[in-house]
Length: 412
Image 1 (spheres, rainbow, N blue to C red):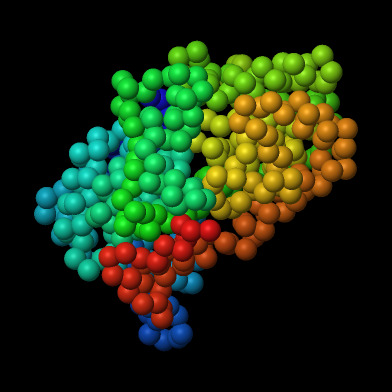
Image 2 (cartoon, one colour):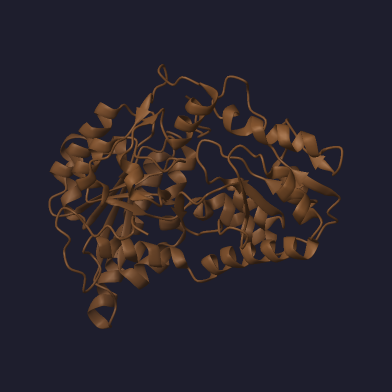
């Protein structure tokens, strides 16, 4: 099963230099944090080790805020952060884990379940008194390896089910979306690398914690910054939707209904349904000249296009998202986006309504942009990291959580 993630990894010649630079920067940060704590009312130093296999770009981007906000995390929360590759921490090298307060790790979804659980058990055994957190960078809301929860103090997702009972379900394929395609289109996932997902032990489901979503990825943050200087273009197109996928890709079952409904609109409004990849600036130009962007689900519900559409001034039209919680939340029905049924049976009606009410279209677009801008300007991501530390008992004044931390972040 393909997920759309791109493999990434440091060039072999520069990897040792990068590792040395990271280690030096960590020692400087730790020294500065310790000094600030001693001479003024600064937070107690906390040592954070990030461990990843660096093989999936979109997954690896879940760590981007720790790099981007390194200075603020140090001054506000006392966090000194070091990033190490998973491959570097083998054998005797694992002993370093015990010198940290918090170890956060992540693996590729291509990792076998047995290997992932074995690795979690290894890290748990070596960490000493440190808290152990798994960062799940996958696109969907499900838990790929439910047994991994037993070995961590917290399991952080980019989006979670609004109803925690959903984690007690079993899904065909990797997620609720593969399960939906199986039920509606008859697609079998029996031969996929991930034929099924769930259920999660109810005792352990409380460890699932809502983190930040793809709005914190470098690409979206950079696009936001660029968009502040973009001039308004004439919107000479009404509806844009890039939903083309190969016939053998399972997400076709999620996107074909959207394509069919948009095609039905073509004799009444101006539609753009490109099937060929284009340079990024052309892609943004397409959306900046459109009034509505229809954004179907892909490998997960939340994708870059949702945020790009808003930054390009499009009204975001997307399948109903009421089953999920995510932050920043640009999925507030009729306030920041327009939801449609998963079969797109009401897509024509919704598009035509907002194409005939430009004032309302703009109001929703402007509100969505304001929600996103407020998230960035307020550095809300720092609050989310602080909430994670509190759930782990690592924030000043927070009680140690024992093995099972407070699960309020999972619950509504």
